[in-house]
Image (cartoon, rainbow, N blue to C red; front, side, top):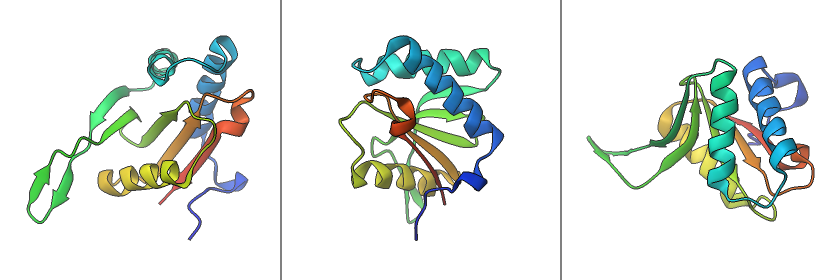
Length: 130
């Protein structure tokens, strides 16, 4: 099953988040640490009226116990969109698997994977749904 969205499945919230990410990338360019992009994107999204939570702990439910296994969502937007940020040469299957795992564990159905280490941000975007 392919979890990437088609062009017709885009929604206004992800479009606005992508627009904010493009603005951050336009100003900063590639080459910084992931934490810098996270801070700036959280600032942009907060100014745009979104509820933004950073580094949200994501426990794993095993049988009847919740275990803290160290998973952290980079940005949780309005309790309904997960944004995972990267500064890598290119996406690997493990990056998409990470986002899909976070979607499954959280019960959230939509996520964005954004790689800021690219000349044009449109080449560093993946929109995924469960």
